[in-house]
Length: 460
Image 1: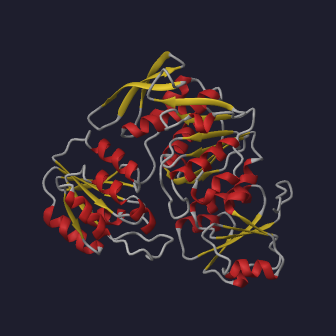
Image 2: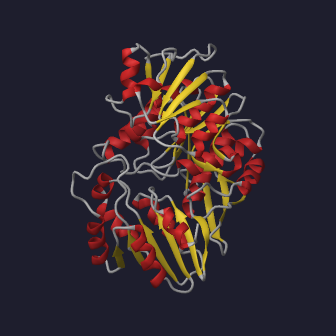
Image 3: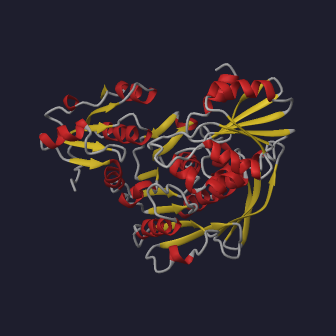
């Protein structure tokens, strides 16, 4: 594999530079004095921002985008061998490296490199811990998979020895990372277009834990099934977080909620009740996301009082139980939830908010996930009062397995929940305008573009 000399700036080309992770890497390298070019399929605010910093961005991917003086090409897992820019690099003998391998090499430049892994909760936990580190004046470099209002984007380039990034398990990307502190929030069946089954996923998370050096730390949720599988014989220090103080180094007890479903809890550290913690983000799942951030920060030496103050400043990232507006007497919220466990968590959160009826407008994400977890999706969604389904968002896939949102509708109907399916957003919007009632809570939900439905209803 090509090894980057970070003290010797060269010219880099990023194929897919407008992606939320690739753009962050490009910005880090420009700050280090590297010359950056890149390509993406369409204009975006992210690409415009990179151009304002001095990057050259091409729209459309063509061989001629890769200049003769490019010395390294970085590409994502979504780029295939027939990509014209990869072909151009091959013809010109330009070395290539994947985004994950490149990020792994970047991490080696930091004394403390934190990788936040888990089937869900990565973006929120990364953002929470980032807020803590900024409040503690640690000047971190931050790579987050969503828009974090406190840094007005997805990237913050710091100039200290601290870095934090999400560590995604898809295609085993996180196995290319080099964390000194690793966080594992949860491990569930997902990305089954790549992984064979849950055991395969668990195996990858175990391998991730093994990447942490002897003087490093693993922060892990003690509520994960068969926890010993992940922690036995690790060389690094293991710190547990969870709901049970008897088996967790950091635990949350006596969880309560205010009228906006914002939680408070007592923090227990190694059996000692330390202080009360209050969050500005909804839901029990965020209590345990915050515990992971608390543990990692405390193990780095940040005081619990500073951590608590920082968490009060954190008000969430885009598309995480995000209030979008009021349509008359109807409250519209949007959330990125696209896995049954996430849907359960959001519906549980929503039940703490004052409303008469909960209407969930759900857009399934990828055919393989929908097929593999069809019963689980139906069970999770059936906890709403009414479900409205959109077509499956294909993302990176083609429908070679014949799955449809109609199949999910049938499953939900059998569970006794009122459910509807419409193939277009316009039909969904018309249905909602005709059928929403006073004091309804409408949640648009999914990892695709379902957010547009609520925004259209609100005239945005």
